Image (cartoon, one colour):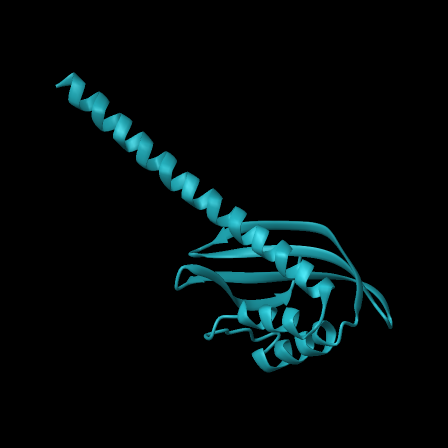
Length: 140
């Protein structure tokens, strides 16, 4: 009887560790994906804009920045290579229910000037990859 309890406890522990590993790897993947999207934004050009647009889920639900506005901004700033510098000041990802929220604070240099941008980008898993379903100004 005691042996079964030990085996059960070990299996339970392994299951919990596997679940925790899955959760942490998912946030790491989304954080890395966000860093890559920032690199694309800095690289600029039509191909970079197209790749950024492909990262947006078909069911994007952003109310603060509707899809049409987000697409216009990406085409204007990234597609036309208006970003001349981009420095990641802070980037963190964490679970928010069954989605992952990334909080980013970046310094953006444009041909027209420089500003600091704080955003919360919400990712949801779609067809085996993480897609953006909401973008809004971050409120700390």
